[in-house]
Length: 237
Image 1 (cartoon, rainbow, N blue to C red):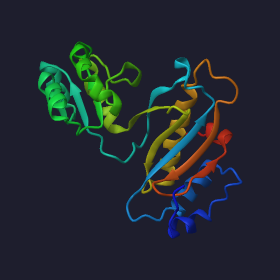
Image 2: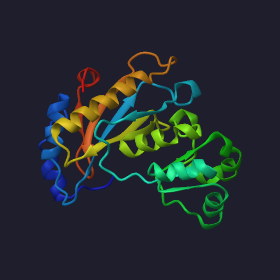
Image 3: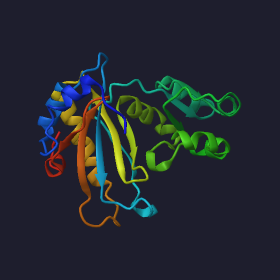
Image 4: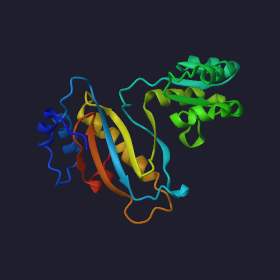
């Protein structure tokens, strides 16, 4: 087990791990317990009552955070001709067809955070799936990253504006960034509430019993703060 440093141990004492905090108490405490000199990311970690061994209980969807994540999102679009130009005009960082696919395949170019594709490109994009897939960059209809050419501008604006994809890991946990510590408490609250609404809406029909079993709020390198799951599910933005 990794040993924590003195600064971590000092701030961790401010968190009572035997109680469940309200969302707003947790937001205030996550700010109070941050000790790093940079602007850390605030994350929500949820333990869900799902069995990831069953495909119909896995979760993969998106949420539009009202205030974004505070991180610049680099978008690459696989599209041809006028669609590629429209993507660049809408703010895509990279757009193209064969030349981009070759660059990824031969040069291991992965200087982007999200890949979007038009349906007609998927036959070609599939050839580099072995490289995109493990990095979570493969366009997928479940994440809303395979869209008709006419929807590219809207999709690009949403992704750059705060649309976040999330999926459970193999243990049934979700880890989602909801902003930066420099956000106001109100902004973090609204992003937190939007995430909880999206998680509730994504409940698989095969999930039995308690769906959201635990909620933890934390910042980069900071201690985890346990949040009352019932209150978190009742949040409004």
